Length: 211
Image: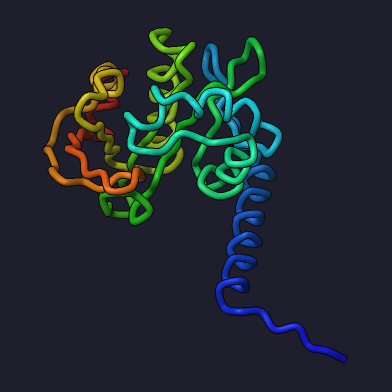
């Protein structure tokens, strides 16, 4: 009988795939849909890959936020199975069509990009170009603020935008975030690119006083 030996890299890839599939299944089983007036925020599904690619392939969406355009439906499916399967990550789905048009999510504590305490989180979001200017992302952000502060027990929510991303800046202003600091030479997911990032924050008390 021959024994099959796997190299460490292959074994690590398999283990990661199993972990991501497990996390994705947990998220589905929890059924934690969040509903707003016009939206349903739910876990991403593999069958969303074509819709995701339709919006994320646009050079107007990812690069301004620091991530590369999606290159194919398969690329989008891989991202659903890895990055978008993380806890508290949601497809932004239109109630009227049942189709995802963007993404939003929370990174809690150490999972954030800026290293936060366990009772603080960072929020990130984007939406497809055809839906810009309709107030959909502010609607989703406000509902995730409610979820974070009331259900998850967060005390602060952080956000940020790179220089030139005026639309993201306006979303944060509309949703009560206040400017905190500017960081220079921040790495993005685009190879070799360093950005200037402006950091904003809203506390639970500030949020409570605004509702």
